[in-house]
Image (cartoon, rainbow, N blue to C red; front, side, top):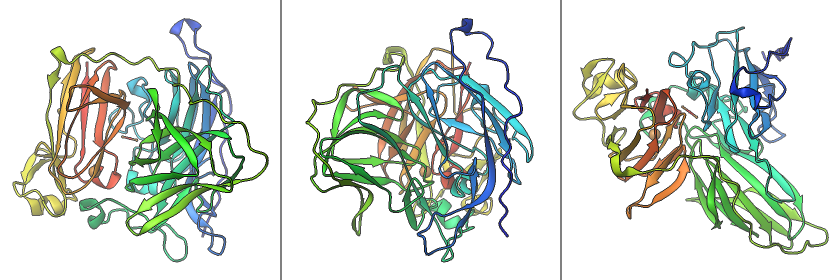
Length: 456
Ligand code: C2O
Ligand code: CU
């Protein structure tokens, strides 16, 4: 039986954040309650789907602030199990990062936790639980956090597009196969029903020449979206929340789990424009834009978004911490791996639900993968010896890819690495604390692909 729980609202406003010389404006306090509900996610001829939702919505209620404001959110746990909120991609104080047993105790059923921190970066971010992640995210817990620039770009419309997929049963229930060994050791929990903003028929009315800012966010647990833009001219203006120095023309783009891409697009079609998903079996529409009305005058190429205050990277004194990813189906862990302080063979690891290792270690350990002094620049050459894609995510700091010619790629918080690929990232360890470093396909994360970085 489905129960729609009472949403708890916040009783009293909390005092403003101390410190920061009072220079930061504190936005209104608000609350996010995670609780079970039922929503129409499958097409209308199916029943409503029992989900877990933030404030009764999937995607979770959209949070929107201006750069420099203080986010002040009381998380209320209306679930029957512990949870937290992780603010994905935000450069925030470690205690606000929402990682249970690392930065805070899990928030138990009926309890609450106050997240409060200054939003130093403008951009497109998202929030999700960091507990029992395969199940909690797959059941619907994920929402978008938009931080607006002081002077946003001149567009006619600004839309958030949350890309997701669902593993549904024939009666539109979320398939309860959260600990599926096959998912863990293969491509993760892929769905059978793809949605944008939790629907499969999202469409907008536009005019030719209309300029839109589209904030694409992939909240899926495993699906890598390959998108094609049709009937529109597009530029990527930011990745993972961080503006590019110059807009990059885009007709196709790849968005891995947890990644974001901000686009500025001009509708060029006279009848219909599309964002399409490019699959092996063909291309199908994810979002449609029906064109009507008098065309608008064409606009000049968009300029860059105002940059966020990111450090400069100088590799001359940087230490290098190589990371080798191994395991999963096809290759396995023939040498075994260390898990929970013990060396285990492949079979014993599988019995523990562990299929992957970073540098011969499955799962998190007492000692971090990397320990950096505050302000130090570090580089991580990553070798993917598995037969699978992985989306490596670092908490608390953004990194840049070190490209073959020694130049740097864009600032990111999540990097997609193909099978047998070697890629290198570098970052300035300028945010003190203990930060997770893991694959953002939670099925992989829970089965070995998780470690942490310490900055002191
Ligand atoms: Cu989106 Cu460990 O996080
Ligand atoms: Cu992975």
